[in-house]
Image (tube, rainbow, N blue to C red; front, side, top):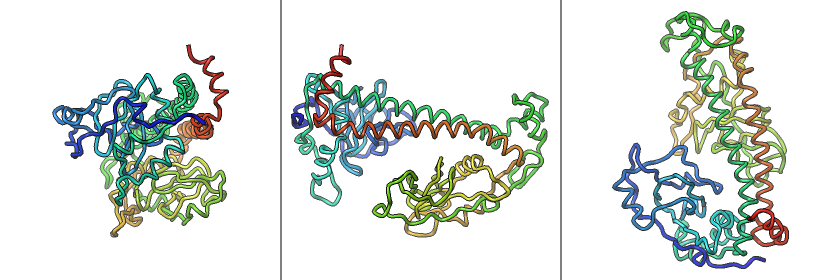
Length: 411
């Protein structure tokens, strides 16, 4: 069993930010918020900002720098991430800045240690102030015990787990790029009508002839304005059904290979499917209107719909991107719980191209979706390996192996 020490012993600084709400601006300095931190990773792909004056106020106790850790105090409690190089930022509410003492703790090791089961249990068992909303106060953080093997072992543990995390992150970024490519193609063909505009102006659309020939060379008026000649305006209800998901409580799920989807994404696994994959899941309650792709057979629970294409538009790839273009979240049900009104969604209008063009689109984007799925499979395996190694490395169970790796890895 590795030695343990209070967090205050291995950090040179533990401080929170001003408790006031930040002043939000359209641009400026990034403000870190609880929703930016999940699974040990900082995601500022959808950043929030404040101005220089309020940034100065929020950093008067400490300015976040590369290698610092940030931990959430509540809602959710105990989520942690590391500040990356080059990010100028300040903390939002309910966050604490941790600055590791580099003579005692490797920052990335500490990031993993704070995610380990024993430390997480200690955090969640603290119940903060004893109020209804748990609150990870500074004194509790300072007295939080973390495993503290020698610094050389910390570096090796960080190297092993960090290598797995880096590969998972690389796969995530690659998938983002593939998604953007598919999205750009959909927008070019079916939103901006670029090939039709090029042909109507006598320009080369820049596509293979067998695909270019599928696009018309002129436009016609419709209830949605100018659309390519021969294409049609349909309602979503004409081209798809939003089928209701089915209740499946966590305690009755049987571990298997079928992903279970809720309105916030994948929420677990089961041994039976509700629908054949690939498919599309749409949030119904809780996170209404969010559109998710399921690469395999799947189970959509009762907070969601899943898409059943109709004969007039069988392309799931087209429908996936088309649904993401609709503001489904605004089509709320008239109830206390936010929800997507299916009948309102069915009335939304959609421009639909010819069947041969839909088939050509499928041929172009299907390989991208398959590569994303393969990458997700690899990342899932790596995450399982990381999660299996984490408690054994942190606890010292793999001490001998770690020490041998230390001789090989460290200079």
